[in-house]
View (cartoon, rainbow over the protein chains, first blue to last red):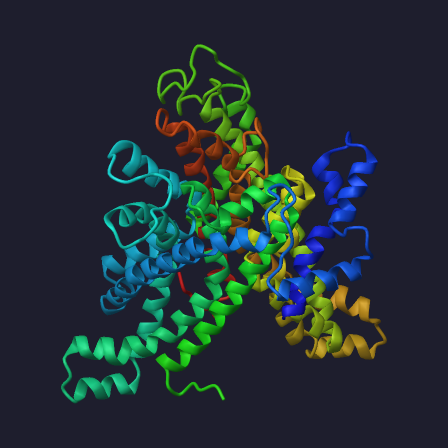
Length: 298
Length: 265
């Protein structure tokens, strides 16, 4: 897995052959290009470059930015926190909306509320999130003047923090909520028919206790699976959200680096994002055994 | 399903007859009406150069359909060829393909497409290529699954017993039977392709101004959101309705052709 990801990321740089020539354009003399290539080690054989790059990467050295001159690792390290925070809070919003909505949909099956949630789901999955972000900016920033439209306060735990985090987190968290609501609904419907739910009811437990302790907990397993499947989307969406709200995260750094053709930075961020996705998937695997004690990892 | 079909038809007709429907040239400047609000001479208002937004949105249907179809076509060709070959031959080709798919699943599609589009140098064609070579994974997995089932069926064995070579069996007996699935899945992939393309254009790596592409138009209007809400709003609405239409269509097609599929939405 690790070899595959690094190979993929590394070959990105070599797709076009000569990043320096692309960066400098055709009018810069060959000697300067050659000198810069020497400095960056781009004149060595490609397999050697790959081994050297991986060797440095595992020690936390992702090279040097071509345009900004700084160390890539330091540049990314400063940006990881805000991105993980944005993605994490968005996921919390997604679940906070979709779990109750899914349970309500399931317990009031085939009512107008249920049909409404089905149409709403298709509507929300069709939403381009950059546009949703702009609509939020328009409504809450430009017209109502109640929330800031860009930037990020240092900490979430303050009034300013809450205000600066609200729009980006909702932009990234709300669209997937519809999909999760539908899944929670169908998963709940399946579980409610099980015998252990009937047993819980027949031993006289109150309905909310049955739904939450016995049904929802078991219905969570497919929801966890969907979270795992949607993780890459979450980080991809963060790139767009960060750009819309000038959020100082990895995503914005990535877009800037791509537009400036700063390949070491692009490589580094793609690698870190892949690592984040893999790490979060592992976390979800661990959560499975917490939700369902029958699942164990030896 | 019906709703989706009507949606798709409307978008198709708009693309076909863009020249007739649109009241103005999508790139014509109207210096008397910079950032004019919707209504009157300009139904959706004008942008900062006085271009008619309604006309640009109408012409945008052409780009949306072109991009969507081209992306899905590239994805389908790569996915079908790799997926079918892997499943049919099994063994190490199959193992290698599945590893590659696993690896690519770890990197967010948008991030990978963004990086590839950046390396290729942006622009409409490069963006289509970047999304196409990134988005084929699901196709490959789906076709692999289908071919795994089909290759053990009696008619494939019969064809082989008659002496047909691997290529002939694949092309004449296996793939035609997987075609239905491919078409349904292509429709289901269309909304995702449209959203990715619009996102890349919004980020500045797809269609370049003055192309009337919706994602790029939303990005252009971003700077004027305080003075002129309509510049970004209408192209964005166009993206959403088109994607919604294809979602309805794909959903309906899937239910129609394969009632067994779990229905999440």
